[in-house]
Length: 102
Image (cartoon, rainbow, N blue to C red; front, side, top):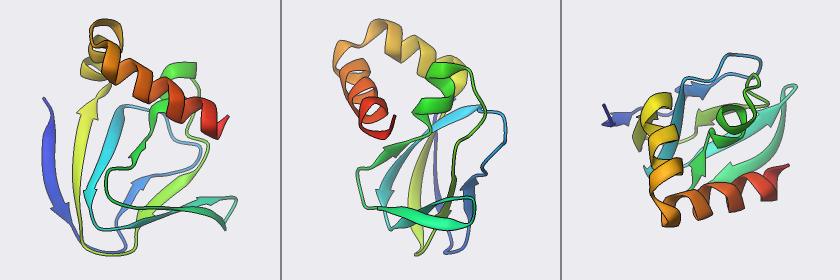
């Protein structure tokens, strides 16, 4: 089930080293991406994240924490995989994001 929720600033959405169980879309707000405790990027509205670990069957490679109140769309792994397999537009966007981060 795809879930849309409002989360406060300081919410950890993804933790480096954790198993991947979902994919995310930042609908509004902002987030910081950290690897080994160091900021490596910022996410703005319409950013997608969490795809890399799902596509590679690896653990999370970074921590993502909201820096402002944010609306987040959470797509569970099973739904994510179905969309990648059946929706060409979705899969193109996901693979482009993954390639940019790899």
